[in-house]
Image 1 (cartoon, rainbow, N blue to C red):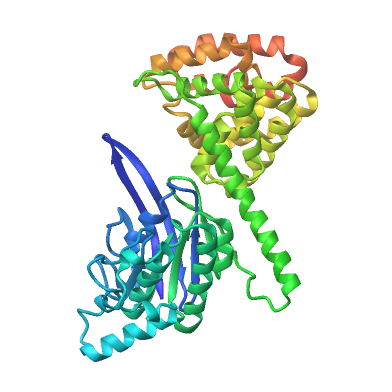
Image 2 (cartoon, rainbow, N blue to C red; image 1 turned 90 degrees about the horizontal axis):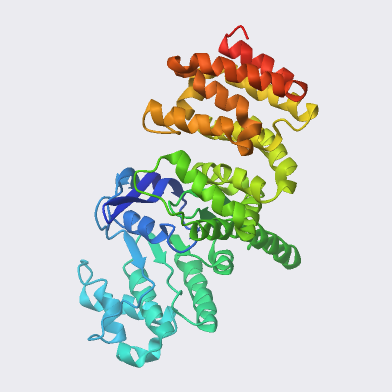
Amino acid sequence: MLSLSGISKEFSLNGTPLPVLRDVSIEVNPGEVLVILGMSGCGKSTLLKIVAGLLPADSGQVLLEGTPITSPNPEIGIVFQSYTVFPWMTVLENIESGLNHSVIRSEERQARARTFLDLVGLSEFANAWPSTLSGGMQQRVALARTYAMNPKVLLMDEPFGALDALTRRSMQKEFLHIHSSEKKATIFVTHDIDEAITVGDRIIVLSARPGQIVAEFINPKNDVAQESNDLARLALKNRIGAIFSTFEDISLIMSGLTPDISDDINKAEYVDAIRNQIMRDNTLATSVVKCLDSWENLTISQRQYITNLLLGVIRNNESYRKEIFDFAIAKFETERDINLKVQLIFTAFHAGGGISEDYENRLVSLIDWIGRHLQEYDTACKGYYGKTDEEAIERLEKRLDDPAYKGALPLYLLNLRSFSDYRIKLKETVKKYLDHERKTIMKTGEVIKQILGEDI
């Protein structure tokens, strides 16, 4: 009925692009309440404005029964979080106002308005002014006005978010009561897990900004057996809660990382600055590791960000080395994104390189993968160390001489191979590397020699 396909949107903040939504695709079925659940600032309200035709998407489209939505449409009604009643109109007049542009006669408009006024339990307040009503009552008026317009789709943007807990619960029941008779296809936005489970037939979870779909759940709220239903809903709450816990850890990491860097710093130096903070901060290091437990619920960009920080975690606490090594090896096997696969390779070498023969045996397969995907590997590494060859070589030389990067030394040697003027020194470095680490990296070294094509 309502289809969202590849919706993306970004704004500009002081001239800097601010991605808000990324590639959101949703199908809303007739009569269902689809909940969009996400943290504040993840793009939920922006998505509703795009669906309502109030804001254009940068890419993607919204279709209502096959017709594109590019401007406000009477077939789509919306209820906002703020109270949108007209203070100069009575309650009944407010509800009628939504029908003023329809072809319905005045008597029919008033009769329809009274029907929905009764449905929301405000019949005795028909002639009251909004200023005499509580917040919950004003929101009932807004809800009744939107339903009276008889839209095909109802959008609800955290409609009960400004109410106290008891009134909010009452309004949730009120909404479900009205929905049971009207059966409008509804998109209900909230950041509250309990509310999502209370009102939703289906729940879609958005990531932190830029909002992307990270999970979808069917709500078991209509199960016949109450005890089974309660247990299923509790399990659902715990699963969603685990996702939000990950978002909170990422938010903590982001808010705690403010490296003192210049505007022209390259990516490698920026990541180094971040890692150095994690190396000194146990709370940040723990938050990074906790995010690994919810890896499947992270977006690609979040996975890349977290993976980049794992070396800082290893420096902070050596006891994480084996856990991170095993994690990187396992995720490398299943991950499809090439850039992320390369990041996981580096992480595995940082965590397990040069430790033991067992670790070495497991790293050989990663080096072998690089040998079979050299072009993709080079593309993923290109530009990471600097904007020019000189910058890149300088950064790589520092890596070769830094004990903290010893485990991933084979990879840094491989990265130098594309610089023709550097091959003589590279040849010497590889030989020195093999001589000093022969006991633990012989297998890896042999594969490196094959890739480099050097007679060392």
